[in-house]
Length: 429
Image (cartoon, rainbow, N blue to C red; front, side):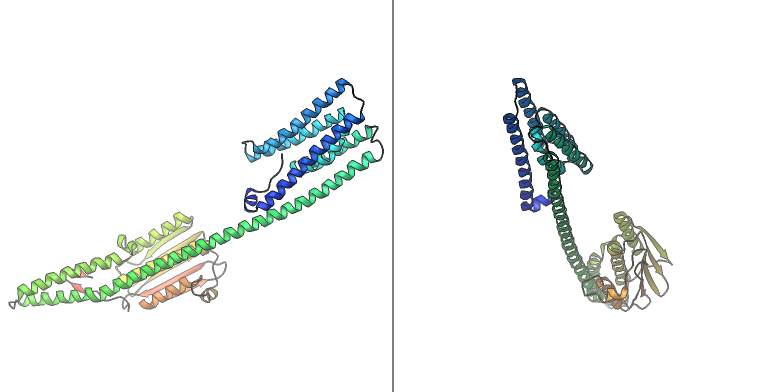
């Protein structure tokens, strides 16, 4: 039975596994060799009768059988904890069997040196200390009782052997710890590399999605400002002509029908390009759904509040507020380490405001703003650029350890990027 390095270490470093296997093999070879030496000395130096000789062979066979049984524990289909318990029982039983073997022939005291290595290698620290002491005392007593080895050497030899074994075992333990620490460091570096690659891939996907959404919004604005406005103008002119009843009613009615059909198709395209969150729910409902999703996925307690009388907003304003909320809540998820967060949407006669706060670790805004493009400050810069198109403002309040607050204000009375609705009998586009 022998100890083994962590599976990850041996799997990744085959040279380490080979070195440990070589040490195990050397230990077992030493044990068997010293057993053979002890058995040979017992046969050559002692006057043995037939019963004593039979007892010697039976005791030797039982002892080596117990030793070989321990070597098979490693391959038994049991849990690691159970295998460890069996190893402690086995090494204890083997020492007891060796002491019984010494009672038959003191020459087996030569095995003490191999026992020191085996005990220190297999037994746990407290049990190993006790068994080493037992092996030392048993070997000294056996050698002192033997006529061939009686003298100071019967004490000095086992004691020096114990010191040498302890020194070698200490060096092995230090090497083992250093190897385990190196393997742990390698595991951590590999895990960090995997995390970095995953974050980079996620960032690439996020940037791709952001680009797709930006293009969809641009197309929606272009269609709204060109085709839809043109169809609305044609529709108004044709209806004005029909009201005069100047004899060209049939042609104007055809123009009206064609323009109405084109306007309907343009509206469908604009709605299809708009964010799906806003298509399925009003702005505040979409924000509340984002907050609930964040709470479900992270355990952060997220509250949502709507102040003032909610009203329809120009589509670019609603899209901007939704995207800013998504970016702000993403920062709470990834960086804030917060336990609570709040989202507040407030309406006033002249503007609409969005506030996102959290009780997380906070950050140094100046340091974030100085970060290279594509780094952790990209979200704030993207929000500012989005607000510039709408004449909005961004305020950030944060400090390390004091949470963060994101405050956005967008004017709605004269929003420069919000095209004026085109009014027809069918309503505003």
